[in-house]
Amino acid sequence: MKAMIIPEYGEPDVFKVEERPDPAPADGEILIRVRASGVNFADIVARLGLYPDAPKPPMLAGYEVAGEVEKLGDGVRVFKEGQRVFSLTMFGGYAEKATARAATVRAIPEKFTYEEAAAIPVNYITAYHSLIYMGNLKPFETALIHAAAGGVGTASVQIARSVGATIIGAASPAKNEYLKELGVHHIINYREEDFEKEAMRITDGRGVDIVMDSLGGHQMMKSYNCLAPAGRLVSFGMSSIIQGNRRSMLRALREALRMGRFHPLKLFNANKAIIGVNVNHLAKRPDIIGREMDAIIELINRGQIRPHVDKTFPLQNVADAHRYMQDRLNKGKVILTV
Image (cartoon, rainbow, N blue to C red; front, top):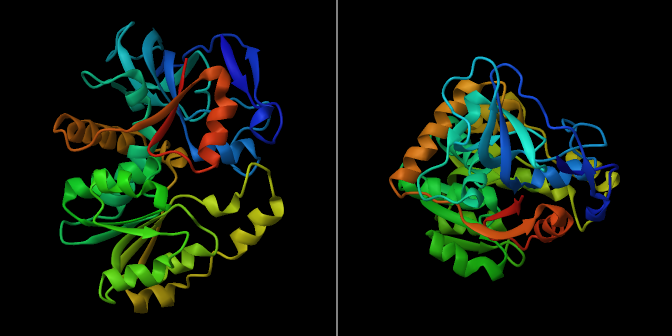
């Protein structure tokens, strides 16, 4: 099979096409003939060598795919060969074939394209797990969503809207119309406005009930300061460690050190919570992922959520896809077609 390999850390052009043996599904796994693969910010962080959980180069990235079942591992009885499916892959998705644990594989919803299906797993599980499972978002509450026009941002807006919550979205001005179409109630121009001051102004000084924070670094304390009593800060990324297409260990270290300290006594008195979400590690709980996938599919069937595929790139043009996403140009999901 053809695979796009990261032979060494670096800029997007480091990707190389390589012929590799087809992976064999282990017990409880499925081999998928990949038709579409999702591009995530974690792939970019891994390519730059800033993701501690990623395999060492030569590395095959890719967290999610959609395609057809090609082979079933021992013990898999739910699916059949040729069936259209999508799944988390936890690396290995930038290739013509990939294996996935059957517990995280689901049939593609009716009338969904492969591209739309590949846009579901990482973004929507992150959003659902953060807002519903861990965040317990309620209809009368307000959510502040950073990078609201991105992949996880779009999913978060749709899920918060399905609950009936008030949504504050932070994004660049070029994405305002897109956010309005999604149903965002209040938009913050993060390039020109202080999101902390704006969030407090919008809520008349009360603060928000939940923050979806993909920024990390020095912005994390500002997100915490936006919270009302009983508020929850969900931290699921650290995009602030990356600026431009080059790797900077100094910037990554500086931003990590500026994330702030949250002593338990401070949390006690403030009645606030800090929640960490990492879908890669959540894979150790396939029971949770399976239930959340089913809940997401139910929301899709009700017409309450639907992935927005912003742009597709052929697999061999993965470098262009990474540049497009790293330049923060995407509105919704970036997909590789195989």
